[in-house]
Length: 93
Length: 98
Image 1 (cartoon, chains in turn red, brown):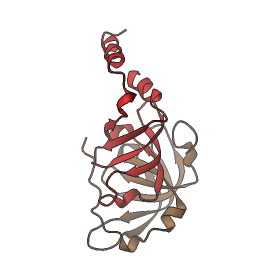
Image 2 (tube, rainbow over the protein chains, first blue to last red):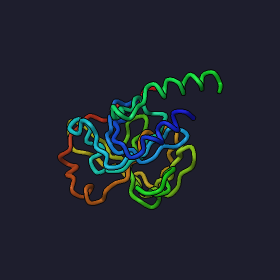
Image 3 (tube, helix red, strand yellow):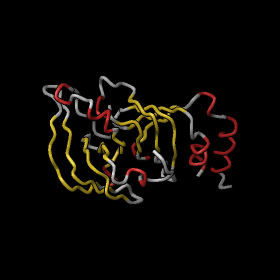
């Protein structure tokens, strides 16, 4: 649940989601659910010349299972807070 | 795209599905469930290649298993109508490697 809560705090921020098929999609985080499925708004594919497959898509739903990385805004992560929270969760608390 | 969870906001809209094997299927979303299984009506596949423009193959009514879905995109019909698919050249998308 930790990363679910974490991503919920990032709603409204600009992120880049890199998928396991190498496609990278940039957009505004609209919502996230328990499976870490992600909805983005105002999306654009990072290399549109190489990947013109989503030229007419501006809003999309990305299945959590195909996400490789999420690139975050640098100020979107409080490393110390996340550090403590992950440790707490690992201890089962 | 309004609404928080799931694909509710896309029902009865034209969507573009990218599957884990790299295919691109376009159709009208008729239904879905928690596992992202999807029912698509009036669907067709858009086949990208570097040798010729985008080929469209009619598929009809399709159910796609959620396991096999990467991305569901809402198609902006205006943008879509403005694209010249016969001139688009691209490698097909790579399959997802888990």
